[in-house]
Each structure stands twice: as structure tokens, then as C-alpha cells.
Length: 255
Image (cartoon, rainbow, N blue to C red; front, side, top):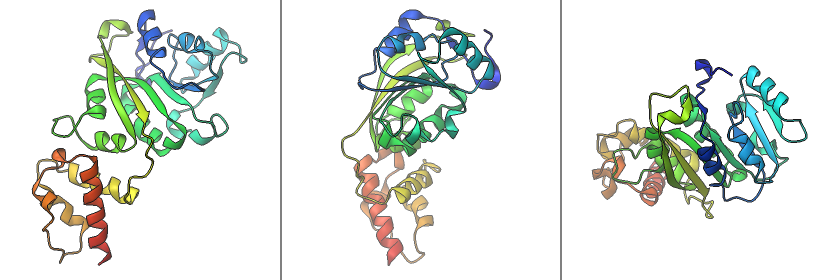
């Protein structure tokens, strides 16, 4: 099977790596694989013994998968993952999300998962190395940004291992890495979550400016800019400080 650039396909060719990704899953339950392609990872996910569904947007790959495995073995969903209502994939059951993700939509995959975080206790995925580092980056790191904060609000992240270009067909032009995200037990951010997202995106869109100069666009014009955090830049704030900033903005908006 030839990979298609339009689908961002880079097929994994290393069996040991595929097995390692599958064995990195810790959640004991159903699995949804994104973009199985020729099924390199799929075969090792099947060995785990949990209910498995795969979502594939490429019709040629869907046909290939149907030929390789009977419907009783895996359920192939011929669809774009970004359009899937994840609450109904396993009839409301929780599941782990796994895959060698298409790099051109990897950010959107993470954000779609976050919308359905109630159903996804764990994610193990292959990303472009740069994106993997952004997702798990900590405050004070140059990679720390919007996707770092919004993901880590709900998940603990860890970069498991890096993967070189030679393990794919065709080889991507970038290094890759596999990360694991495990949902936190605490589901309450202690602030308005929609406003939290808005605050994070607003201040990081001008990340080189101190918060006093960026957050004011969310505030009434007469708001005193005297909160101590406002003298810092967004990459210097941890999750709890972003929550505090969000609550301060909410209070200012209500007065």
C-alpha cells in the first residue's frame, strides 16, 4: 500500500516499535486506534485482548483492513476522527486512545480528545517530536504554550521515547516521539473552563508580552491592573496560577 500525502500518512514499519507502543497502554479496557493504515500497530493492539475499534478516513485503507481482518476481530469505522462523537464509540464506556497520528491534524486530535475527556482516561500516541515536547512541556520551557496548559489541566503527560525517520514508509522529514497522557483524578479546575481556555489562548497569542498588556483585552476598561501575576509572561505560569488568573478575570468582568 502506498501512503498518501493528503492524509498525512507515514506508515510505521518497525514491529518492535509497534509492539512497544501497544504495551505502553496501561488502561485495562476498550481501545480506539486512530489511523491504523496497514495495521502495523493494530496487530499488537489485538494481542492485548481488549475490545478494539479503529477509525480510518482513507477508503483504500478501510478496504485493506476489511480484507486483513474479519468484522468479528476489529470494528473499522470509516470516518474522520475529528468528526466522531466519542461518547458513543463504545456505548458510553471509557476507552484508551492510541495511534500513529497524522502529524497534520495532531493538534486537532488532542483538542478533540479534550472535549470528550470524560471518556478517555488514557492516550498513547505518536507525534512529531516538536509537538510531543509542546504537549508535555512544563512552565519556563520554550515549548510551553497553549496546548501544554490545556492538556495538562486534565492529563499528566510523559514523553516515553523518540522514534527516528527510518522507522516509517515514507520517512517523515522530522523526528517523532511517543507520549502517554493519563487523565488526572481531579476533574474540577476550580474556575470557569470556557473562560480558562479563553485566557490561556489570549495571553499565549502574544507570549512575549507581560500579562498586564495582553489580559486587559478581556477586562472592563476601568479595571485596576494590580494583580501580582500580571507582571509575568505566560510561559512563567503554572496551572494553578492560570486558574487564579482566570478567577481574577471572572471577578473583574462581573463588577
